Length: 135
Image (cartoon, rainbow, N blue to C red; front, top):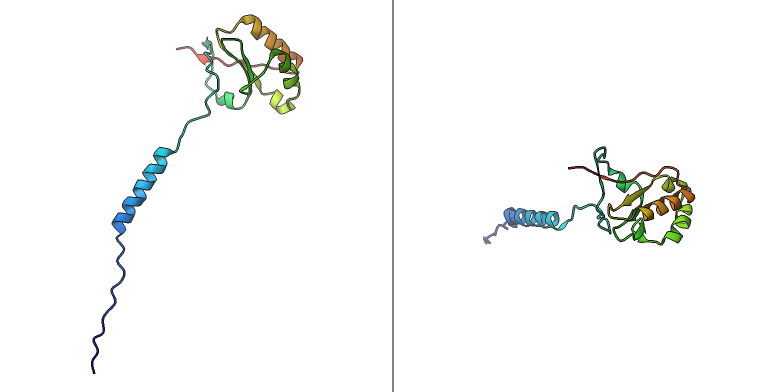
């Protein structure tokens, strides 16, 4: 007795559609990922300087910022003039040595001088100030 033996077909996987799906997923993940740097919380209009250098120093420093309304922020956290000296004094020494001043050009000069005095009393020896390159 002869039985008909059926040959099993190999499973068919359509590779072209899988490649299309993978390319679409790759495009989705690339487009949906954001590639932006940390944005400052306060928009500060920095004064221009002919000797300014472009350095990524703003990411390395503890920043005391003063906006045009004379509001003071220490690393993005609002702080009063009275609390500034004690807050700076409590910073660890490596962080205190990287402290920098970033003042809006419309900030009052008296406020900037008071902040510089508070920082000096807090133990800051060297105080760089951020500017932007003149166009």
